Amino acid sequence: MQARPRNVEVYESASGAVPYDDWMRDLKDPLGKAAVDARIGLLRRGSLGNKYRDVGDGLIELKVNVGPGYRIYIADNGKTSLVLCAGRKNTQKQDIKAAKRYWADYKVRE
Image 1 (cartoon, helix red, strand yellow):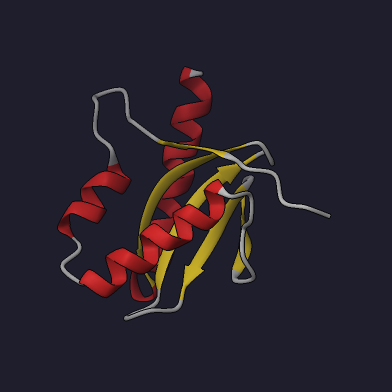
Image 2 (spheres, helix red, strand yellow; image 1 turned 45 degrees about the vertical axis):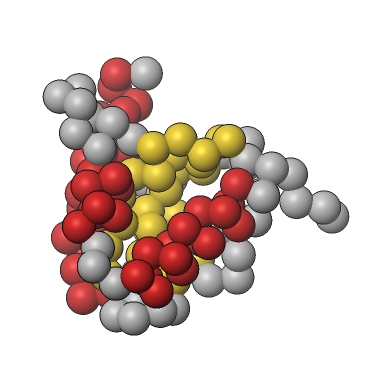
């Protein structure tokens, strides 16, 4: 089965905040940034890759095994992926909670 390209969007709060973009802007690890960008590129090409897991409430955690173990949190319906936020392995619990809040907010406003 061939992967189908996905439309990748980034969550924006009602106030205009974009948590993923803020996180990427503040990330000082150039190799980490490149790896996260590559992971999003893989998603755009239609693949979740081989390192991901369901974190509940319809959300997926994409693992990036570079540096401290970066994570990207998305909602995905197979055609469109909404990037909610990102973080590191050591902030995983808080990041998952934030992703679930952002997803709930998104669904209420859409």
